[in-house]
Image 1 (cartoon, each protein chain N blue to C red):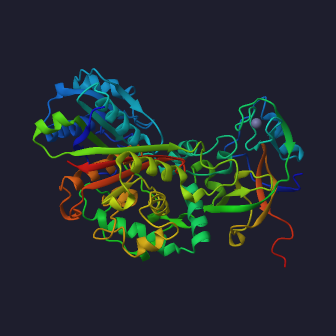
Image 2 (image 1 turned 180 degrees about the horizontal axis):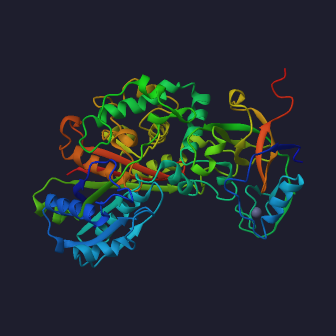
Image 3 (image 1 turned 90 degrees about the horizontal axis):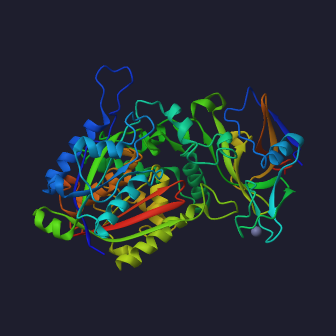
Length: 145
Length: 395
Ligand SMILES: [Zn+2]
């Protein structure tokens, strides 16, 4: 479940393409499901989703909703960005490791001064005017103790 | 297999060369490179008729002349039995050019092969250039839309390294200060004014925790190396170095694996290093100098650790202590490295080979490492997802 929605200004600076295959993923983001593919032969779950299994090279994969939770493996704050992203600077990106043993690179929608390695995060939908993208926010309840 | 030598290496000083579109007098890519080729052949004391292969770095998209390799074969009137071609492999481009030119000689297709290219990009603003390069260092549908930039991945290496080892920002940035000291002694270097650690720390933030002087400048360049058989090298009467070993590895990852892994181990460099040491029959402590492809300060530390030149987790501390400085235990990037020698990205590994050639033939002038006989070079692509290593030895 994607529980967090983050309003963004304007259109996506670099919108992703949609294929007949990835449509399931992007439709899921829009509808609140964070999904990827799992191999029904060897059980390998991979991200980004793929129409084949990169572990056993089989073609028997199925869509599976994942938790959307994880922890920050590393992060950075981008001050010097490509011109198409300049209006969003400074912004944070990071690498998130999930309980499904996935590693995901994504935007971190977290105040700079709070960013730290190992911080628990949860997936969120970035709501641009032309469509959604995914990013991670600080998990609720983290840091309140 | 034939023995391969590096017989000559010429280049223009790294810097801003590319013309702005409106400039009345344009710098032309083929004119710039032709003079470098002429110089390298004169230095090698071989005639153009002996050249049987030319392997080029593919010029950037901004370079007007397309099919540049075959155009240059015509412009220079070079008749070749071996390959005339361009190579593109991200940051590894120059290394693959070197590797392919070596193979032409090693396989006996020719006795003289050129490894060469031009890199012209500085008249294109960095913010525009990145709109294009960000597509080379991430998945264009799942990562690029988040706004990752090429060096943002290295910045995340730095954050993780500091977290795991307790290394300080000052220790990591000491790479840039050390490289500037080296560049001040290199006439081919782009930045040669004195610089302190305070200068690095005070420079503007680019990708946290790295600032302007931790990251590569924009650079142009033109370089030509002459690879030759041992027979041609001996006949030339010129100084030369011998290729003693090679290694390569691609870890089957583009930027990040799809599962948690030790990102800062630079496993591709570790494996390409091991392959190199096995091939050459050497151990890391036998390396006298190293030229490593390291766009950002942190990268030099991590690759030196992966190659066994610095101790794992201690590389930043050892760099700050001067172990990789000229006169230190294992001088690294005596050219000045990407930060100060400059980083004409598609040619950087060729400029690194040029530095090893000058050092190992005792032509490095005031930055000469006394008694340097064995030099290692290593280049990469992505976030060191692939690495290519070569070791050269004094003849
Ligand atoms: Zn499988």
